[in-house]
Length: 226
Ligand SMILES: Nc1ncnc2c1ncn2[C@@H]1O[C@H](COP(=O)(O)OP(=O)(O)O)[C@@H](O)[C@H]1O
Ligand SMILES: [Mg+2]
Image 1: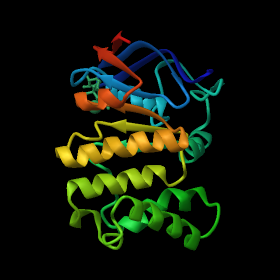
Image 2: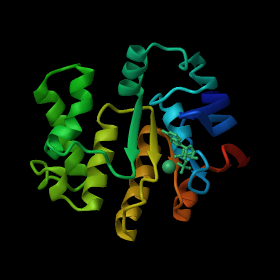
Image 3: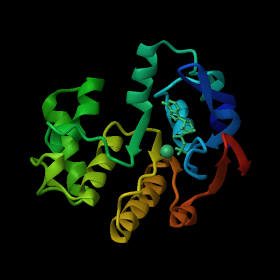
């Protein structure tokens, strides 16, 4: 099968005053469609940076990112955010739900931004996703009124609303208890099997490795095992 997402010699240097912090120093990586790949590595090894670059949330200092053979590292900000909105889903450790909006609004937002259809259609899909994730009674609550596990389920629903090809998850079970993280793992397996969605997950959770097709380890900004 063809490679779907490729990173070539990715480097990232953060400018911190006078000196630069090297977060990634030449990462090569390729993902095929339908893979579930986990990235292990100690804190500070560059996991979040790698996900942010591959997901188009930040730009590499050097190197290329190819999606379906097209170089996305040189897209304009506008084109890159459109691509993110249509093809990528993100799940973060601290959920990043907008506090002033309800759960239903949070989950509908990416499809509202995408703008194909009307609010009724967006909310309809958001409602059915939230129901699927056991949140039918919580839709009109604000994030702070939900437990960590519930917020994470809402964040998964939000990541899925535009039916992304690839889902990036940064320490997605970092704040979940065993039951909630097992639910998360089951959901990934199901989505991967039903929709052939590709996953790239940064984690410390060894249990995630069990569902992965492949595991990589980052150390000091380099892949040391793959
Ligand atoms: N915005 C930033 N500005 C400066 N340094 C950063 C920034 N983000 C991350 N870093 C540094 O880059 C390195 C890799 O960080 P990160 O990608 O967050 O690692 P991980 O997710 O594996 O903990 C660390 O040394 C971190 O301090
Ligand atoms: Mg991190």
